[in-house]
Image 1 (cartoon, helix red, strand yellow):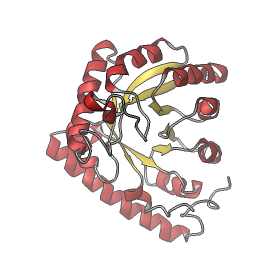
Image 2: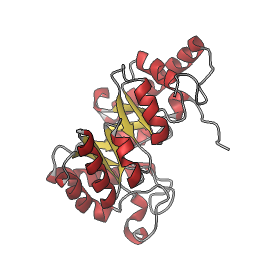
Image 3: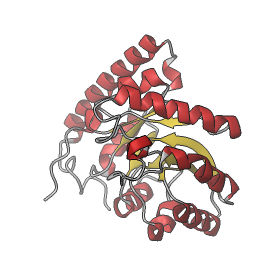
Image 4: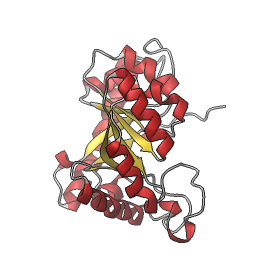
Length: 255
């Protein structure tokens, strides 16, 4: 994918786009700073991961010029070429979308962190892909909080492992060569007991993370919160927030 030729940011005047991104990023940084202060946390405790899906590599390059280092994608078809086009930059790549096992090798080619590990077959596929490429992938378990309690048998539209199955999946990641357990991730659920209650959802994720760290002290990442609820995530202890729209703008609906 050529830089600046794909996505809703393509074709924009570079100077105008740079100014727009700088202003958006400043607003997000102000929100993060205020959220950290309110929670009694240092700003350095929270990493901003900018979700750049559907936006061109040229936007990512502008963000890198503004100091962004962590970027996220959710489609390997777009992310691989984008990462290749930006290989000269000191970026850390996160994959945040639901991942089919047959796409694990493609993701292992560019990704540093996979936030959407939610089943044993995917662990096996990622481990095989990482070994074949001589890399180590850092894995976060995507926790589906709408699969807890009375909702345990339901299917989450966003994917994820049920909280009751987190320990078993964590053990599989830890035992898999080529993988390391980085922590946990969630998206505020649309159904179940936590629907419309992101603060409570993120507090529950922190409880799950705390239990995980008792067995694996290195699994410190808590990936939670997006443009609409990053404050609640920071208050609950998130170490990474995934922000797209607030930085890059509203994505057009795909036809």
